[in-house]
Structures are given as C-alpha cells and as structure tokens.
Image 1 (cartoon, rainbow, N blue to C red):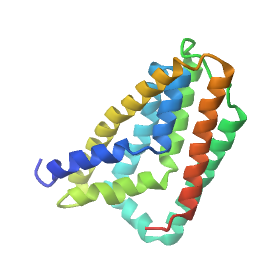
Image 2: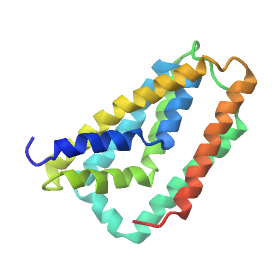
Image 3: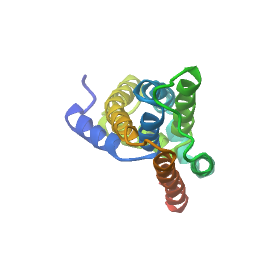
Image 4: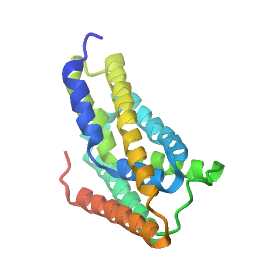
Length: 204
C-alpha cells in the first residue's frame, strides 16, 4: 500500500520484535510452564493491548501523551512498578510451575492477563507505536499508521510464537522443582533488571 515503506519497515520490525523484552521473557516462561496452547492464547492479551496502542497512535493520542513529560513519567513509573511487582511475585512463587499437561481455563487466563498488563504498562510499547512505526509512514496519521501498526503486530506474532516454542522446548527439561525454580528465578531477575534499566533511562 502506498504511503508505507514496506521494504524498510518489515525487516526493521522483525529485528525489533526479536529483541528480548518483558513480553518475550513471558513467552518463554509461559511456554515452559503452561505449554504451547495456553502460551499462544496469552498472546491475545498482548496484541489486544498493542491494538489499543496502535489505534491511539493513529488518532494522534500517543503523540499528545509523549509531548507531556508529566504524563509520560506517570506511564513510565507505572511500567517500572509493574515490572518490579512481576519480578518479585515470580521470585516468591519460583518453582511452583504448572504442568503443560494440565492446561485448563485458569492456566489459559493467567497468560492472557499477564501479557496484557505487561504490554499495556510498558512505555516501550507506547514508543513503538508512537515513534518507531510512524518513521515508515509517509503521512503518519490515520489509516496508514493503523495499517502499519497492525502489520507490526502480525510480525511480532510470528516471533512471539518462536519464543513460545523455545520455552516449550526448555520446559521439557524442567523435570524437577529445582530446575523449574531456576527458570522462574532467571525470569524474575530479567523483569527486575528491565525495571531498573527503565528507571535509569532518560526520557525520549
């Protein structure tokens, strides 16, 4: 479609979606703990949040938020607080992993909820749709920006699936409490590290 630099956008979006972040860590953790089906269902939460952010960017709401340093700081520190909470709660429950063979409505709902909250409170996701995607749109507003945002979601859906498959493969080797605890502790350290890095990073 005219107005979108697809030749530059697709490879750039692929690289960005492959960069490990909070949601990517969740994909690995969910794939290992709950199995592929529940982990894939969790992506509904992430991409529902992403679609909201893409719509906000298309309507110009995201750029308004970015121009307000106070508003962005609120979003930033909400994200930091959630990542810190996610890290601490993961440490507290380390080793209490669900079995991928016992998937039910509860285990499916948990990944959806966690993915959605992580994506919605992550200021990096806001920047993704408000700053990164518009670079490849000739008229950064309206339908073209929304289409590019949806295209990014489709691209990340494929890479997120790869992370989930990786997590499911790792899960095959988590045969005891000690190994499951190790994965959860590593995930918790990643969440806390991201929270610390985000707290020290300068605003755009």
